[in-house]
Amino acid sequence: MLILDLISWETISRWWPALVILMGIGILVNRKGRPFPSRKGTETVDLLAILSGVDADSSSEYFRGGDITAIFGGVDLDLRGSKIKEPPARINVISMFGGIDVRVPEEWQIEMDVLPILGSAEDERPRNSVRKENSTGKPDLIVTGFAAFGGFSIKD
Image 1: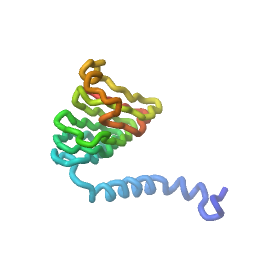
Image 2: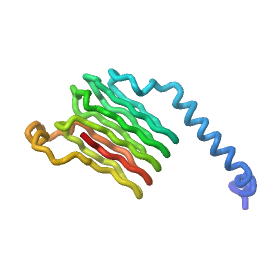
Image 3: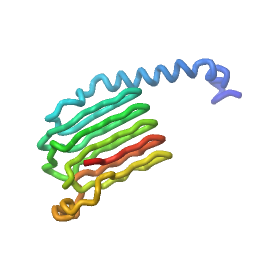
Image 4: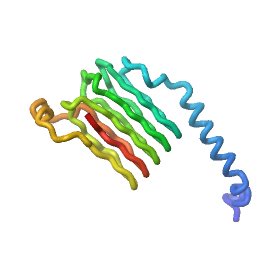
């Protein structure tokens, strides 16, 4: 059987390992130009963990959000030293066969729109009256993304 009369299944079956390796190299080359994630004063975070772990924190006075990706790895981000001057900040997460933990100040209001696919996405913070007293009805942080065979959690 031919795909569009150009490539046969036999050709694909012989070359699929090389294709996977080339895709991985493409991901790493794309990552090379991004800023190093552990700078504490940056307004955004861009964290990537593939087959490894990343521990980072931010103490920015003007935190705005960022991207977090964990593929067969783990990311631990501590935002307890950060402040959000113009809410909401936005974080996009992708967790595939890995885990992402984000620690936030206990008074922050969090809105989560994370799709778990055979995984979990949860706010593990205890119910707290401090959040209710300081509530403006609007979230301080909006988290979007998905967790496939992995997990995402908010902690304080």
